[in-house]
Length: 131
Image 1: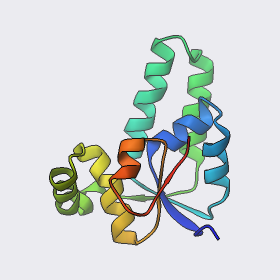
Image 2 (image 1 turned 180 degrees about the vertical axis):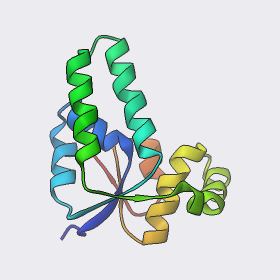
Image 3 (image 1 turned 180 degrees about the horizontal axis):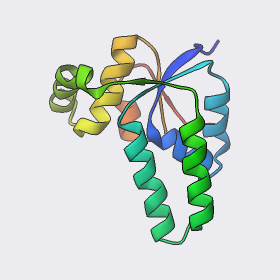
């Protein structure tokens, strides 16, 4: 049985919206509650911008995706509250501070971390990798 709540990395939202990856869409659909650190938005926006710059998304489609992300009913948590734990995770597990925020949040909430990033998934025992 899949837990009703999970922490989601920005990569899952990007893969679902931009790449239309079935595993990412399914992972989102299987949960009742999506927890994210507040840095999910700039990370997802950066990915959308990058896809536009390299020609993988038209500007109207990128703007549509950004609008869709704004409407998602996400449980957004402050990275300020995660700073100490995220620093320890980053140092101890060799992650970026950004990625460590997702791990620290999932571990604090005692819920799975759902990600499309293999390295991030390997950094915590309770991860679900979408491929």
